[in-house]
Each structure stands twice: as C-alpha cells, then as structure tokens.
Length: 103
Length: 460
Image (cartoon, rainbow over all chains, first blue to last red; front, side, top):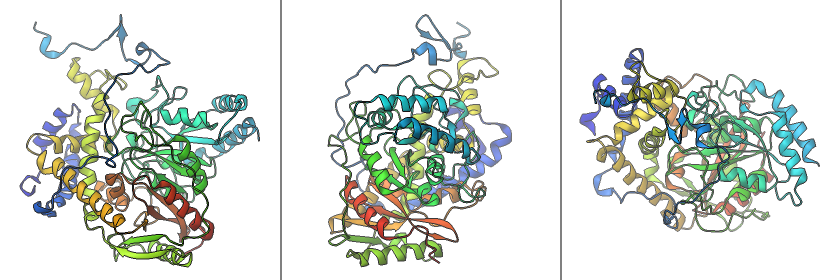
C-alpha cells in the first residue's frame, strides 16, 4: 500500500465522481488532507505479514448460513407514491439523462 | 401501574430533558396512543408499559426516521422494523426517536445534522456515539431502556461514557429488518438499560430468527438469565493488548477494581493475548466505509432522499447535488474512503486485506475461548467522556475512541459495557465479551458484578 499513500486533488475528484457526490471547491483542501490522514492510518495493515493472512472473513458464527432468497410481500402502510420524490402513473419520475438529450 | 400513567410521566421527563438534544421525534399524543394500545392488551407481555426509546435509524411508521441526516429529513417509513413490532408485542411503549451521529457514523454524536447531544452529567462533554441520544436518555433517567445500533461499538462506547448498561448481541441474534443499513456485515441492533436486567429483558424480547432478515440465526430467542450467587467456576481472560501502559489512570483503576471483585466472587482471572486486535481499528475503517459506500448509494433523490436538482438539470447532477448537499461532512468522507478502497487497483490492497485481517482477529477470540476462558474483561473506552470539539478536526483521533470495542464487532461476538466506577465524576465502563451466543452467560456474570459493585464510587 505504501506507494499509493499520497492522494491528490485529482484522485479525490475522481472518487467523488465514482461516488456520485458533489464536493465544494472550498472543501477540497481539507478533504484531501483528511483522506490522506485516514488512508495512511489504515495502511498500517501492511504490518501484517502475508504468510499470516487467513481466508477472507464470513460475518458471524459458522451457523449464519444464507438461506434461499425467496421474495416475500411485505405489507406497507404507505404506497410508493407517498414516499417517492416524484411519482406518476406507476412510475418514479427522474430528469432526463444528459447522454439522451441529443437523441 | 397503568400504561397511561407511565406515558404521562415519561412525557414530562422527555420535556424536561430537551436541553440534552437527545430526542429527534416524540409527542405526548403518540405516547398516549401507545399507552392506550398497551392498556387494551389482554396479556401485555414481559415488557408491559415499559417506555423504550429508539435510535432514529430504526424505522417506524408513526414517527419520522431521519438517521440524523438532512437527506432523510421528514422521511416516513411504510413499515415498522421487526424490533419495533417485537417490542410492542411484548407490551413496551415506543417513547421517542433519539439523536445520533448521521447514519450512525461517529463516536461522539457531534455529527448529527440536528445538533450535538450533550452528556447528562457535563454538557460540555459528549455522550459518546453514535447512539448518544439513546445513551443520554437512559442515563438521565428519562427511559429505563433504549435501542441503539452497533456497527463498531456505537452502543458500548456511549454506555461507558454515560454510565449505563449497553449490550451488543451476537451478529445474527437480532433482526436487522428495518435498521437502516450502514455496514451490513457488522450492523447489530443493540440495547441500553438502566440495569443489566432491563437490558436483558429487552434483548430477550427482540431476539430470535426473522424470516425478513436472512442473516438472523435459526435458534430460540435469548432467555433472561437466572441470577447467580457468585462467579465460582467462571474463568475470565484479561487480554494484555487492551491494557496499554498509557491507559487513562481512572479507567485502569476501575478495571483493577473490577478484576479484584471477580476474584473475590470466586472467579478465576488469567492473562490472555489477542495480538491481532492491534489492527482492529484500521481493519474496521476499511470495511465499514466500504460497506457504507455501497449501502448509501440508494440515497440519490430517486429511490430515497430529499431531491435536490443540480444546475445542469440532468439525472447525474440530481444524484450529485442531492448527495453532496444532503449528507454531512463525516458521511461524505466515509463514502469517499469507502469508494476509494473498493476502486479498481486498490480493492486487493485494502478491502481484501482487511477482510483477511478480520479473520485473524476473529481467530484470536476463538483460540482464547477454546483455551478455557468463559468471558473476557477489558476497558470499554481508553478514557472517560471527552469534551465536545476535542476530536472533530482529526478523524483518526475520533476513530481511536473505539479502539477497544470494534474488534468484537468485526468478530460478530456478544459484548457489553457495565458501569464500574467514576473517575473525577465521570463514569467508567468495563467491557465483558462472550463467545458467539453466550449472551446469557455474559448477562448473568454482569448481574453479579452489578449487585456487588458501586458504579458511583470514585476509583482514583
């Protein structure tokens, strides 16, 4: 992990784009500093030797076994139209995708 | 006692406690409706008329669920969480929804969009977090019990700071259906109580398998443990790594006192080692943000979240503006860290390695319990409650407030904080840890200690 410790402005902007998160210009310097502080800290896992590495962890005790995913109807006291930001004729309404504007 | 009387008294106490900023939603009208429902029950159950507060990331039909975030301000769930249904079936009354660090991300309840929660004993200090509102309400005597949630110590740490009992069950013991997801391999609904018995009775009522949560384990609900006369026959391990030389003097004194008490009660105490716990905090702060980044993708202004249309008016701008303006600073930071450690080129170095170290941490616990330890004893926190603003500028300093609690979350083990003394007037908690599904043993031992130790005694 050591060579990747310095996260720059461009990398934070790239990650923000992946995360679909608007970041204010005024916050960038602080965010870059804090991201570097956090990522450098978690890189202490480098100290764990590779030959001590076990198999990836499964949450909970061995008895937690995922069951077959059988869809079930959950009774709702409010319909989707009551909780959706915009809803009409059975559809959730969203703005157009920018890439579709020219079509 | 009629539930209506309890509801009226609870409402008075809630109104008097407003200065703590511990509640986000409550009303006397809803409390009275809860009381009327309980008073109509033919057999009100084991929690009859018990007022219970809920952390505001547990969904309820009748009150908003905001997760302490602007992005969910005013959100009304179309269903109740399973734990809410079970509490009500047992006769409990939902008293209030409590303040929290936004989306349960924090260790001080300073990261709520609706203002910080104040410590009931010293308003300049934090109650811990992220379930600080629930902890503060129980500590202030407003309610005898409350639900919080744990992803990496968010009930045990505030329980220790506030001087109340906080119990995190085994992963899979309590349904997470209706608990707003943060880190799905870690999240547990957990319980605060004035006493071990209060917490145990509530945990018993909400535990057990749930067809709506595939990660619940198919075994009977936890039973309320029978009272033990002493601790004879019990072996308690003290993990060396949890007693560093620079441990706060008051915390160290409180733990010495607890250790002596265990011996006096007939328990055997032995030194053990959990060497990989040293990596618990960095492991947690890779896994939890990675899972959070995935879970919080749904707050985009389309599926969930108050919509904010961006300047360009297209859907990508809608996503980014909704999320950028709706989430607070700590949540944004964790989403970015989580996205970074999951991104192409970094996944193996961070996320995969963290999952592997997580297995080593869990293996350490398994080895120690297999060697004959029934329980482990550690401090819950490295210091008593710190001052507001003390750690907000340095996220890593804040993360280290969880240094003794997040390894049990990573391993999925049951653990609890028990108040065992005070240092300069501030509560100190001792943490007890049990093997998977060892909650009954955990609570039974804690009850013996509770009965024989004065949590208000100065230890320094």
